[in-house]
Every structure is written in C-alpha cells, then in structure tokens.
Length: 371
Image (cartoon, rainbow, N blue to C red):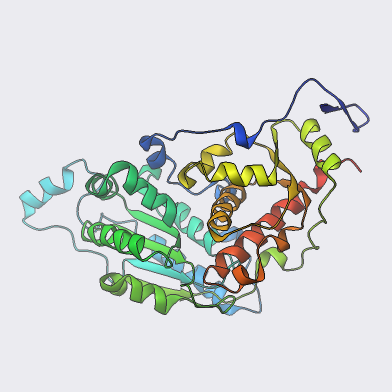
C-alpha cells in the first residue's frame, strides 16, 4: 500500500512509493570528491556573526575573535609563493630572487573542545571568512581527506591542494594510527607549500572523559606539525540540548510508513536491512547515498549489533546531519542504539555525537507525522 496527502493534510493511498536507501549503490568520481570539499549544506550560511556564544563560557567569544584575526591574516600572498598554481609567483621569484615572506605566527589553528560546542560551525565560518576564491579553499572531514588520497593518490593530492590558501579538517581521526600518519605526511607537504591549516579532532581510544579536551593528543599525534598549530580551547555543553525540548519518542511503523508515502523526496527502509546495506557501500559514498532526499524514514530501529556496524552508522549520521535531512523512526529511541560497552569504549565520543545528531534530526522530523 502507498499513501499521499489529501487537502485535509491526512495521508491517503497514492501510486507513488518512497525511495529506498538499500536500492542505491552510488559511484563517486574523483573529481566530485575534490569539488565537494566545501562546508556541507548545513553550514552553507553559517558565519562568525551567526555563532551564538554561551555567555557563561567566555572562551567561545575569545575563539571567535581569534579566528576572525586568523582569517584576516590569510588575505595576503600565498605563504609558499605558489598562489593558485598559475606560475606567476615562481616568475616573480625569478625577477626578485626570493619568495614572499610567510605571515608571522602559526599557520594553523586547532579548535579544542567537546562535542556540540560549535567547533564545526566555527571551522566553516573560518572557511567562509577567509578572503580567497572557493576553489582556493578546501573543507572536509578527516575521512573525506583520506578518501581523496585513496582516489587521487598521495602525490596528486599534494599537487591538487598545494595551491590552496586554506585547508580545514573536521573531526581529525586520532583513533586511526595508520591514517593519522598518512594525513600528517600530507599536511607536512602542504605546510611546505604555504597552505594554512585548521582542524578539529575526536578523542583517542581509552580517553573516556565526556567532552574531554584533546589538544595534547592532537599535537602529539601530528608530531612535527605541532609547531604550526595554535590551540583554541572552546568550553561549553552540547548546544543541541541547550534550552531545547526533549527529542520526540519513536513513532509506530504505520505512522512512519504513512509519513514516508506522504512526503515528497522521502526514503523508507527497515533499519536492520539498511545496516546490512551500509556494509556493502564504502563510507566515502554515504553522502551520495543521500542525494536528493528530503527525509529518511526508518522502521524497526534496534540496537546496533557490533562496533563495525556502529562506526558505519556514525558516518551516515554525520552525512545526514550535514545535509539537514530529517530522520523519522520507529522502534528504539536513538539514545539506545549503542550498548553500554560501546558507550564506555574507545569510540565513545563518536557514538555520543551520532546520538546527539540523530536526536536533532528526529526533532526536525516531527512535523512529518500528521497530528
């Protein structure tokens, strides 16, 4: 059976069925990976002026002031003298015998704070505020950056990004030693080319304090790059729960199904089947998996069975949150997705971030259900 919405606003039978994430197997070309290294749709319009500092946390206002100054300082010549790769700066060096002096001070900032204090908002605001053309600035998560290296190769990635003015890396994965070494090597080459850096990170496995600050871990893991980063500490609680109502309770399977058929651009999947499908799609494609969706409807949400599945779900939750796709669900509430063992383990911070983001998206989906 399928449903649509009549003039009364109540769902009724329709010939149009919702999409299914399980039926999608996207292929993402390498050039799309490069072109999409911009702040995600949720952060298209964020600016320093739209960040609302908690008046009880002065470090938040201080971070905004410091980042404004950092962005302004990136308005001059490319520190490595390479500009956009056009060859004009090397020609100038032949004329005058030396490259332009790099700006004084660290060429990188690290936003140090717990989840939900607005680090990504500030990182995206820095990208927007930096006075350079969009093609000379890059923004992506650590996972997206490693996927880019996998698609292009190390040397080609260095060449592609070396002409940039700024590279912003959200959620630097300190819990993956191999990829940390890979990206640290990449960043070393980019720093040599004059690219400015900005980053946030997660927490290392075994560091279980909720909202724990990770600057020492980050600076230690990137080793030789540490001197290039100025840590900016951002205290605060998860803004997604600051003064907001509790997330709505899960709906019935029938309510979710009716809403899926009544909502143009919605998908409808059973949760266990979706988790199985995610295992067959590389996480670098999860963004493409959600292309064109206006809502995700899930039935029979249940506890995630293992850590590998849980980490894939974290990536999907991040992509849905970035794209502001509401999530309507039946079954278990999202705060019961992960076992106590998972929530007390090395990836605790990721799981709490996923719960927080899915809860926000569930709140956004409340209006899809006919009252």
